[in-house]
Length: 309
Image (cartoon, rainbow, N blue to C red; front, side, top):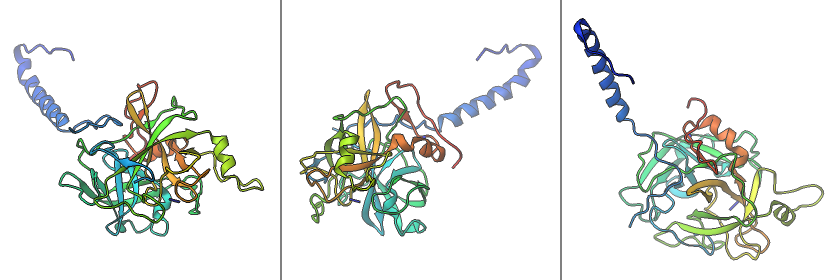
């Protein structure tokens, strides 16, 4: 791990004029009915490896996707809309202009057995944040992945919400991470590679900054990062989990609080996981992704989006 009517009177000679209009209105209504509204974000529709984590249940985290490079799991990501995934920019280091190397696997609980209801879609292009410097541990380690075509939502494939401006995550807020990365440093997740999950508390930003302080005014934890995990180690994200979600539940909806970005080693003492904050980059995401949904304590924002794409 570096690791979006009033009734009409049909009287006299007006009947011929109004009938075609009513027919047109009916056709328009039918066409509108054929365009389904996106499902509510952050609400799993339950069916009946993270270091130190546990197997998740099928469809428990329906927005978590596997980003494949040349057909092999490379990073994780989160589904925002039927056309966009958000992940870590460092997943595309050296390959940003070669999107054909990548594809996205959605709806797969076990990577070794994705199942007939999973979907694999090619990548059209990748937007990395313009501030990201391609150095390990850089700020703005976030990228938006445009899929080659819209995916079909199902109980296994649903979008996650972004936090609106009302959301605050004080220290010790209990959140979750999920991914298919190594279960220990150098130990890959064994077959059939079920999605791993781990509950992690948010760590006070000042505490985390001190832990990763490099001296001479060089703070490794920047203002757009947040930390989560355990100071004693033993449980953490690891290699292959990069780009995956840090998810927090607010008023019944799961919000994407952060993106797994970096850390020193895996599950080492006083080296918790560092995540890129979505609150810090919400406006950038919304400028690019149309139809991303925001949720928070107000619960009233609904779908929102930016410019055309």
